[in-house]
Length: 494
Image 1: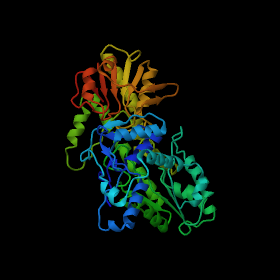
Image 2: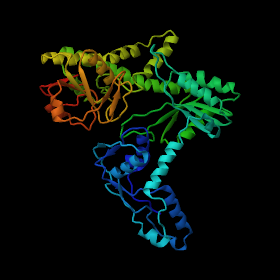
Image 3: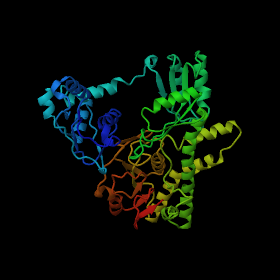
């Protein structure tokens, strides 16, 4: 039996329907690589099962090869249109450049299966997609009682900081308390939420022991930090190595066995504390180095040196140097926050994590540094921030994603509004931006629109935008990401 031709299983299109469904159900625009006219022969799994059964039980099918599918080509644009109709929404796709090796069209010639096996797909694309959407909707629940029938649980809840900059682990504590009510023998619980070293042993372990279980013998507990880089086309959940640390050796073995079913490489460490520390080291490494290069950018500005040229030249050294790049500030739910868990924990032990605190101070003040640079640049054009029309290009915290959590763009907008600027933004991934008392909506950029702004600020460098064109059509551009590599008389770099 041969399914219709498809892409490399690791490619974006190998699981295009689940990807599109989860994006649309989450209210987010799906991404298409190419023009969306690539076509596939989408076939509901029950049809494939039916065809296999017919082949296995048909006397004339022995040794034969059959193509299985619906025999209908559907473009990715059409697929999204059908899903939008089923969900009663209207979210247009985001188009990115086509990827190398993409199969333009794939099609299953099912004539032989129809003739020999009398196979005719019973479930068409519309009905199959309705069932898929229904599955995604029905399997999500807030009822913890379903855990009584579940053997393995992964806890993936937020771990924000309080205003006092100490960890808020209430979500972990609440989840632990609810899971405790549903524990059963031989259950495996793995905490994935980023947190300070000791959380698993200090918060989860006592609760489960108090419920009468002996962890490592009739209940299993581990920590495995998530490693996700949104928008990364090379590294995904499956091929990114995963760290596991159990309360006991048996806990580590069992948790490792679970994750090995879906992840190519799983690395065990000696304890939950070690696993918790691995995640904090990874993110602290980035936070401290970004803090360093941000300060280098400020130094270069004062010295009249182009920081981007300096970094690119230094990166030619084949050993002992790893390039990091400055920006308008840190964003996302990891790097700006996670190192402070470690700093807080060490303060309890009467130790001051100086690098972490200093890097946090530098990174936190970058939005203010950017707004000051905007003000100085406008001043050189004999304009004030007060009353100027300013366009922010990109509000997501990193390129080619829609996540705006902790994005430096939010602070830049707030600071400029406080100084009296008229703020607008454009971001193909974030159609709406909710601030404290206002709602801004993304604007489609045109040459006429760009010329109407006193200043355009590149905060997030989404690849869908032609920044050289933006520079040509704008009066003044503040480039926080080196998106306009060749610069220009009206371009001011970070």
